[in-house]
Length: 131
Image (tube, rainbow, N blue to C red; front, side, top):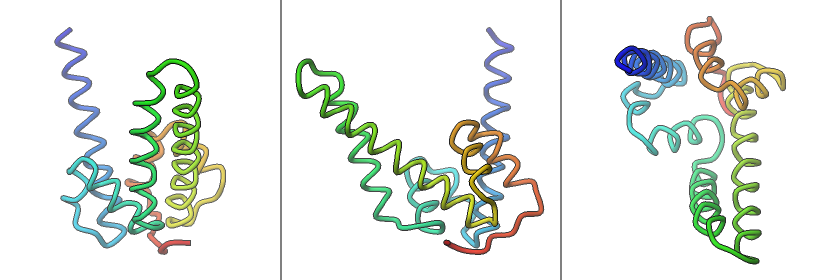
C-alpha cells in the first residue's frame, strides 16, 4: 500500500508541475494551477469564456444530485451530466486550439487528460490565445 501512495503522490506532483507550466505558457501565474476550482476557472478564462465554468459547475452539481434520485428526476440528472460532458469536450477543444493543436489532440485531452497535459506542458508548444 505504501508504494501505491508514493506513486500517487509522485504522479500528482508531476501533474501539478505540468499545470503550472501550462499556466505560465498562457501568461498566467503558475500558482493559480494549484488551487482547486480556481485553476479550472482560470483555464476557461485563458482558453474560452470564464462563464462557461459556472455552467459546467452547476450542470455537474445538478447532474450528481438529481442523478442519485429515483424516477424522472434521475433522467433530468443524466441530461445535466451529459451537458457538462459536452461543455468539457468543447473546453478541451478550446485548450487544444489555444496551443495550436487540432481535433486529435482534443480527443487525447478528453480521454487521456493527464498524459496530454504533460505533453502540452513539456513540449515546445506556444500559447497562441483563445481560438
